[in-house]
Image (tube, rainbow, N blue to C red; front, side, top):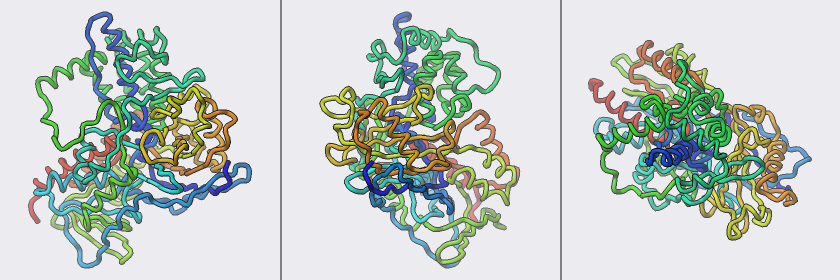
Length: 592
């Protein structure tokens, strides 16, 4: 590989998931429903579209996923050793868009309606949602971040003609996200991927396209005819009944849609979105909207029909006319990367955002509400608040709450965040296999790799094809995710080993075997990346909330991706939902 130095950065903070999920595939569960409904058309003459699963705002991706606001960097994050076996390149990295330093003030204790702890995307969006939609009820909000910048794990980097992401890679442009974009003044900065760009899954040594729409279903070869029929009949209800226990994703999909759908679509999708093990992920917690279809309608198609009937009876409110209208299944970012959004929100909030503020104590105030103590560059500062929202990772929230609620702290400490590495490499266009080029260019969103196919990389996003301005001319930029719940030893590996595995894997299906070594643009290892929505997740979350209630911590709320879902778009939806709950609470609280 090119002789340059590679900067590998380790962080104890989690990764906003979206990475793979939002940048990559149309939801495989949606695809499966299309398969099912297309099969149904041949027997019933009708078809229905399934609503997109709750946690996958995508498609996709990224693996990586995701989001965590206000997490504290591990002061002992390891720097990788550099061995002589692999010479990699290095770019002097600098933030593509440096988030604005928030105002840090001293003085007497200030009183707020709401304090949001965590300046990641969940915390910032919660504060902006309060300001734009609930400004009368909640007029005085503060966001505090322990690190030196806002944005959480959104990490956009620029150097030597490249612009790349080391956290989440993109988002699904749902209406909540688009509202946040417009309210942040970023409508003109928004960039959307080509909705017609193909997505691929590695199977049988070949990259096979995932169907982009119903018209593709009869012709795509990722599933056999038998597999398509099994999915179709299962979706119609010809399947085993639901068991009396909480099902894993694997159990649910194999029972409803068959083995092929699970092994060739859903298993790689789970790896891409959660970096997780589908045998342990909870269907109800991770993909609640799809789980609910069977619950309300007896089958995937039956539930879809019921939802359509309900929507007809109770249509949603008119769409905001300010919002852009994305075409097809696509993903979004900004001209200068994802960091553009937290930067803009922080600028809008102004001195309501404080960085380098580490929360050290929470005390109940005598007249109601809470007194918060912070260590800041200016010394110890206390503030008062009626409501407190913790949008930090669950393990950080556990530490914060331990003195006040042992029950909540214990529950929050049990969520698992596996490690994931984001490896960004570049090849000359001439290094890409001829059969992967269309009109002399690499086209597509990216590719996912089932664990059964003999590669360790979870998936690869075609960064330079997805959005403009990501790489120099005639260079291909590839963002690769590796690690996860089924490969946790990634956290102990040296950078050269990680890069070597990724390089080896992409040469089996995308890059020519005799291509020159890649330029290593960026390597970041996230020791705690994406929260796993495993079986029992919803019960743990309820235990945490119950612990808060039993400890008399009224007005303390939990937020972030472990609460609402790992996709970036879902985190923004969750921020609007949290803002409504907070506003309702503040309205009920007597004026102090």
